Length: 246
Image (cartoon, rainbow, N blue to C red):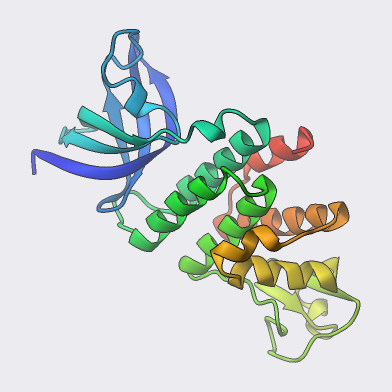
């Protein structure tokens, strides 16, 4: 397989040498790949548009010893709406960072590829923070880390009340008895119910969801801490967005 195609999204990009870029792309057929686009930073490069961050494109790649090389690239969607609004830019960045940390190189994840592509399109018209939160929960579910939100994650018992405890180590909400072994953060029951809707609602109905500012903060911080616990890595883009008030 000296030359092969990859239907892929650019999820990370960094400068290399004088005019090259090293790209992390997430492809439908081959999963996550790290490739080099030579000369792409030159103003007259024909590959320049197809190698920009978040671009969805058809890549023709040449297999190399260390890094595969971008031979040709044909853009399919540039997602211009992601660059017109800082909140959408940060949401897309948070999605890309989470995806990059969550998947291993060279392991196809077609369901996750479709999810990512769909949610990049949804960012055009939907609340960016809502889309980022829903994406994170659904990504975790695909990878087998779906949070338990309707019963105690440890004992399976019923959990009720105006406020509940969410424990990242336990994998979801915990009852008062299990809380002794699995410390958690206290959340209003409404935030837990909203997370469940983000996870299970039809995509076409996500734009109908409304959440107050206090709930946005609770849900965002809970999802971030849960992702960081499962991935064992900090989510820098999420923290930057929070610092910026996004």
